[in-house]
Each structure stands twice: as structure tokens, then as C-alpha cells.
Length: 432
Image 1 (cartoon, rainbow, N blue to C red):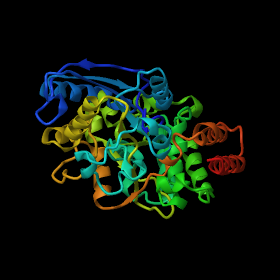
Image 2 (image 1 turned 60 degrees about the vertical axis):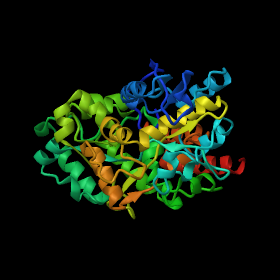
Image 3 (image 1 turned 135 degrees about the horizontal axis):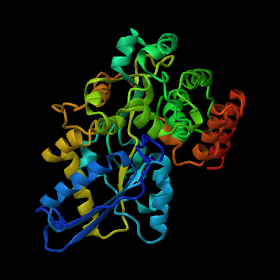
Image 4 (image 1 turned 90 degrees about the horizontal axis):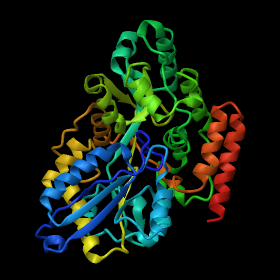
């Protein structure tokens, strides 16, 4: 993010990057005439920027008179403010990213009805729930993603730890201590790398497993809830403390890049809390390690043993204020990407996406991390994502994130952190 994403699953720091390509329409779209159509895409999954460029280049060859400009926002830059600026300046994109119910409400004036697109009709059950508005579907899922503890198989084997058996907090804690006692022998700096500078690591992904419990992992249910109890907060504290106490440091100076690029990809830590989206980054640093030595297990949570958090972090929206030709060309592009034979291959093999759509039964996930997500999804051993309920609301950046960071940096007690977070949520919901 997811998470980029806005905060979710982002990759390295990046500003807006653009690619312009020219081509011509196909026989079943309004762009099939000689009239040139321009599409602008502003998307929030920066770690897939290169791949989207390559896909756009391929689309260019197949659809001559369509011009597509792709810009990717993420890393240290939040997506929503950039989108708002583009809209207010009269430079709104044709296709943009939505991160959940709050975004659906916030950008309602821009959202076209996508209910009749091929992609919407092919979407897996439940994947469109967060992007329904007045009976219409206003977003199409990028993909489904999963996260957990991504670990180094070689280090675990050398330490004598079987990652697949770490299904409870007690077992995980024992394994962490065992690995920590062998740091010099294993050649690692720490068991974890907890990126304290990245607010979404704790506020979105980790909190989803504890805050989200009372809403059954349902983002829409949480978004509409007037109150939050945070009854599993002690379990969350234990997981934060475990990662912090056995992390390379200083924790508050670690960010996504130092976590994934400098530490995990280079074998300096045994595991990190991350998701399947990191594969392409790790592969660029060490292809052999990415292919052979990465694994992922669920974060052990009471009541959710051996279940992986799987959900949709981002959706595509189409701007209803653009011309009919431009909207049609945009919908045709998204339909092609997710439902055509060639598009589906690119989704799986180029983007390394676990598809959120039907029609991929014969697909083989191309890497170790997406294979884990696909396996747990197929076995229905998953936990839903509730956190899109609050990404995009003021509670996340103004209340929840700062309070979690105050605790992580030792400036505030956990009890105060929990009280402030609950109070902030209840106040925000009461004023909606």
C-alpha cells in the first residue's frame, strides 16, 4: 500500500513519472475512428510504475490513435493531495486511484458508473463492496494482495526454525529469541527491521488484524460504525513490542527503503512485516534470493490462526467529467487489461498481481509471495481488510498514526495511545 496506495504497500520514494504514447483505437470502441483520444492515468501504486509503462507501451501497439499518459505517485508523497490539486487546477486525470469508502465519498463528483464494464462483471465476489455508491460500481480493483511476515528461508533453516509452524504468538516469540541468540552466526544485524518512519506499517496493516476484528475485516462496516472498542489492543502492543525489541535500529530512522532494500533484500535481517508487492523490488536487488529464498507466513493473531490478510488496496476510477470518447477509451483499456487473453497474462506475469477477477483459473502465480496469497485465497484461509475504512479519513493521519508513533518512539504510554485513538474515531464518526 498499500501501500503509494496513499500509504499502503508503497515502494521507493517517487514523484510523478510520466510516459506519453500514441496509438489508434480498436474496432469495438469509440477510438476506432481516426479521431485521436487522450487518456491520462494518475495511479497510486508506485512500485508498479515501470510495469504499467510497459503495459501502456504494448497497448499503444494494439490501439493506434489512443494517447496515454501514466503518472505514479507514492513513497513519501501521499496520493490524495496530488489528486485533489490536479482536480482543482483543471488537470484532473481520466483514470485515477481510489483506496476505499472514504475516497469513494470524497471524489464522488469525479466518478463514472463502471457497473456495465466487462471488468466489473468479472470481479470476484466481495471485491467491489467498498466501491459501491448509490447502487453503482464506481471502482475496479487493481488486484488482491496479501501481507504477513516475509522471511528469509536460508536464515530460518540455518537457525533451525520452521516458519510454517509459527502459528501462535508464543511460538513466534520463541523463534524470534532463538534467531536473535544466533545473530553473529547467522550474519544478521537483527531479526526484524521495523520501519518506524512509515506510519502505514502499523496504522493500516498491523492494526487491521486487531482493530478490524470487531468489524469482521469488513471496511464498509467499519466505515459506517459510530464507535470502535479496540478490544484486541493488548495483542497489538505485544506484536509491536516484539518487532521493535528485536529490530535493527534506530527504529524511528528506518523507512520502507531501509527495511526492504537495504536490510531484507541484502540478508541483514531474518524477516519483515510486509506483503507480496515487495517481490519486484527484492528481485531488482537480488534475483536469485527473490526466486529461491523468500517465504511468507501469516502474522499469528488470536482467533485468526493461520489466516492471511488478503484484500484490495486500490481501485481504478474513471472521470465522468471527461468526454464520452475519453471515458469509453478508458473503460476499454481497463476491460482489455483484466479480461482479454493478453491482458490477463500481463496482470499475472508482468504486474505479478493476484487477480481480483474471474477467468484466471489456469493462472500460475509467477513468484513465491503471490503463490502464498493465491494459495490462502483459494483455500479461503483469509482475513478481510478493514483498514480501507479509515485510510482517506482524517482520523488516520491526524490521530491514529501520530499516537502509534508516539508510543513506538517511547513518548507516550500504550494506554494513552489506545484511549486517544478510540476517542478520535468516535468523535470523527459522530461528526459525519
